[in-house]
Length: 320
Image (cartoon, rainbow, N blue to C red):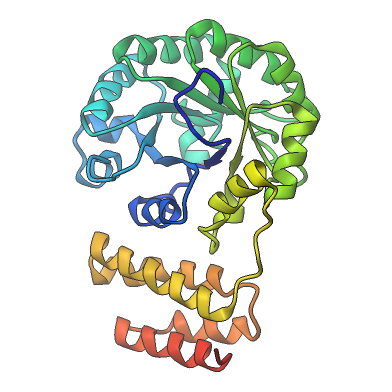
């Protein structure tokens, strides 16, 4: 992105409960791509909640991590921006797009599309608090009758945001339907700061299509990375060199899954890691033969010895 300190046109989307430290390390191990943390609740971070503090602490990660903050209080945002910088944040992102009810009901996330004055106060307070870049991620609007992405983007720019990310869906859409790239293009044509497009980018070809169609400066990839942490680097390779990603063998998928599980165990300890690994095991095998049977067996595993046996038995059936 021109004028920015990012060396890739591909961003890993912040996803709660997914883009944790183990996932970020794995994504980074494949190569290029910009990495964003899970969203960090400023209320909990301000209270020094142990779990939230750990999510925000990226000091041990040897690559740039943008830390995403969510909340509805400008003063707390400023305080937590300073704390996030102390905890190693490379830059800061403000979540103004999360559609989840408990976030919205706290005057946070997508709620802020309905209160531009509060949204502006939050951005200004965060920008003034640290020398770090501050970006904003938001949606097209509250629903199809209240689309205000262009106005919201102008507000972000005027309030000091370094760049913005636009998810091409409304709050009421959540993650259903098709992302509206026309609206993303309108936003890009309106503001001078860089724009990242988010929505329905699943591979290098769709990433290039979004760049060409909307003229955005970069793309953000979310759900396509579930069970495919290599996709961020592959999209980057396609955009740079038109190099298309190859189909992954079962042996390759098994190796990455096992690496992911090892990272989860190291970071969380076995009890939590086993619970978390269940969703990842399901995602990794989603395109493979008899995946349903594998998922049914894996989720019943009561320890990692049993879980590893399920993995070995399933993948060994494919041969080399």
